[in-house]
Structure formats: C-alpha cells, structure tokens
Image 1 (cartoon, one colour):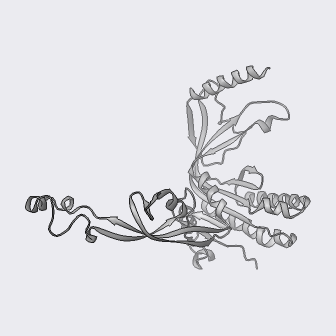
Image 2 (image 1 turned 90 degrees about the horizontal axis):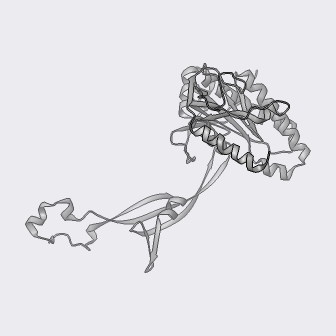
Image 3 (image 1 turned 45 degrees about the vertical axis):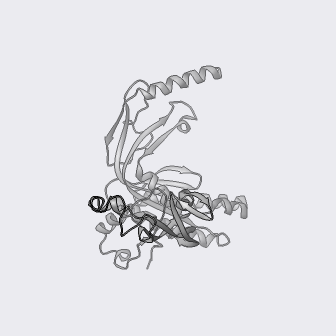
Length: 331
C-alpha cells in the first residue's frame, strides 16, 4: 500500500473515532489488554472500563546521569534486577503491572484493600531500593522515587488488531484520569532535592478612592475631600508578598523612570532568595494516606508518625501530600 493510501486510511480511522460513542463500565478488577469487554472502535460503540482505586508509579532517579557515569552493562544489570524485583513485590501485594516505559513502572491495584496494598507495595519497593540493590551495587548511587494517588481511572484499549509475532506490540491500554497523572507527578519529585528561587516583594498598592468607598461624602463635600487628597500617602498602603520566580517574572510588566511596576502596582523593594526542599522516597496524596490510616490504625508507621505532611509546590497537585522514608524491619 502506498503512503498516500495509508494516510487516506488513517483519515478514515480518525473520522470513525470522532463519530464513535464511548461506554465505560464499572469494575473492581484491574483490566488487562486481553480483556474481552474492552473493544476497539471501528463503527461500533467503544467499550471501556472504569475503576476507583490506587495507582502507583516508581522511577529510578537520575538514570541518565547514572548511565553516563557507569558502564552500560552495569546499568543493564540494575534495570533487570530492579524491574524483576518490582514485578515480584507488586504481585505479592496484589498489584498489577500495567506499563513499563524505560525505568518507570506503573502498578494498579484492585479496588479491595487498595490503600493498604499500594502503600505496602511502596514500602517494599523502597526497602529493596535501599537495602538490596544498594548492597549488590554499592558503587552506584541508586535511588528511586514512588508516587501514589487514588481515584477513578477510565481504561480503554488502543492500537490495531494484528496477527503474528507483532500482535502484542500493536495494542495496549490507556489509563485516563487524574490519579494516573497525579501519581506520575509525585513520582517525578519523590526522592529529589529541589532548589527553588523565589522573591520577597514589597509593593505599593493604591487604596480605593474615598468617594468610591463612601459615596455619600461626594454629596457633602463635592468632588474633593478636604481630608484625603488623591496623592495623599494615606491613599496608599504597602504589602509584603512572597512570589515564585514564575509569578514574579510573569507579573513584571514595566520598568521606567527607575521604578518597576507589576500589573500597575509599584514595587518598592524586592529580594531574591532560594530554598531547598528534600522530598522523601515515597509520596502519596492525602486521599491515599487517610485511606491507609483508616485501615491500619495500629501500624507502627501510623502510631510513630513515619508519614508526614510535605510542604510542596508540585505541578498540578493541589491537595495535601504525605511522604516518608519507610522500610520494613524484619526480626
């Protein structure tokens, strides 16, 4: 088939997708690519599933830098050993591997006991990272980051139907929903030290004109108040604010006559500062933490407050985040 015909066929496929209805059915079981209830589109309603559960991502930290520093064979051994270990503990904690992209692994849990299973799986992965991988590869500064979120995931099958040896390589599952995105964001930051630039800014704001605040005065004194002139210092007030680097530069709109202005407000002074934030190896949203705590009130990690709330500025993560450096202690 010529390239022109292939593109014409793709055009038809895309048109078909735009006209296809999508139906999602509830499930408590983690869908798999061979699930007969998941369908391709092709002129019929595309069937998917939705599951409310925990999703976990784990990623090797600084993998590019490690590859540059260490022999390729060494990194190949680490990837092999770590991936195999994660697959084994995921199965032990009732998790299902649903994506492996390079050194990032996605694990989804059945709805039943998902909070306990997901957090315990994270503890096991962290334990392996700190106490097993490091033991056998002591010359490598090996670290991993783990992120967990809970919520509704919608699952659809994508790809093309094909027979032969390439059959499995041409199809897969797409997990659509905030939990997958948020867990991935948490994984990006877990076990990292972030240096953030921010500004302490003092700005001069103009108060609302007195006649706007007290319209009745204009009827008494006319257009001008004998108590407060337009350029009177009492007409202004100073406010100190902390702005991120982006917020500061985005707000900066003018610099003239030796004065900076942000959105029409004069900057009286500012100071550039930096702060460091070190995130622990395991990060989870407050939904996961609360679910885990409610199921495990007598667990050591709960009684001893091993999980602590993290001050964070993680992209797209609006709610509270908890984290910890928790591993297992075997007698």
